Length: 88
Image 1: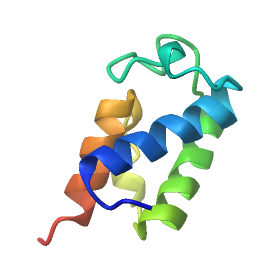
Image 2: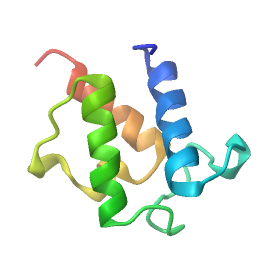
Image 3: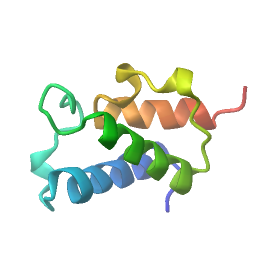
Image 4: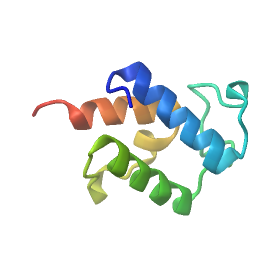
């Protein structure tokens, strides 16, 4: 799995398409589309997504980080992963 932002974005998009949208068409999910507003993700979906991020990117997501702005779009999730992986 690629560790750069493009690789993260691609992995996140693929996960959402396959596990939440049940689609394989990347056009179904623009990077800036709101997952919450479009009804793509709910609280259970967020937990599943967090587990995916922790397992695939070696993150430890804190409860205080589980905010809508961190998980509302592919772009937001990618930015969150990049921030979480950057040295403090």
